[in-house]
Image (cartoon, rainbow, N blue to C red; front, top):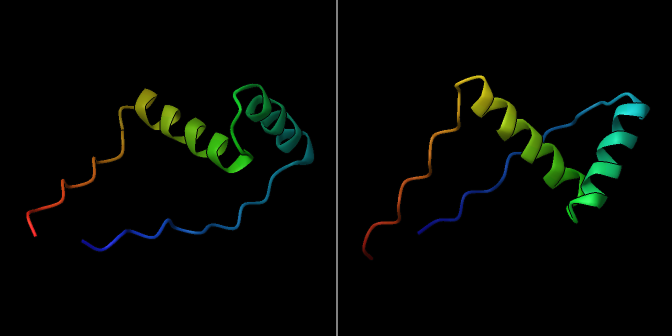
Length: 60
């Protein structure tokens, strides 16, 4: 099975938004990157557009 590499994205944030996310991440014991992904996944689900689940690995 080949591991899927996470996509790398350059993201520009207003410093106040970054600060708020960093505080939220610290409260939840996550990195800023993980907190952004968490927030995006939550927003996708609320919008009725959840990401497709990854396919289960097949037998080797």
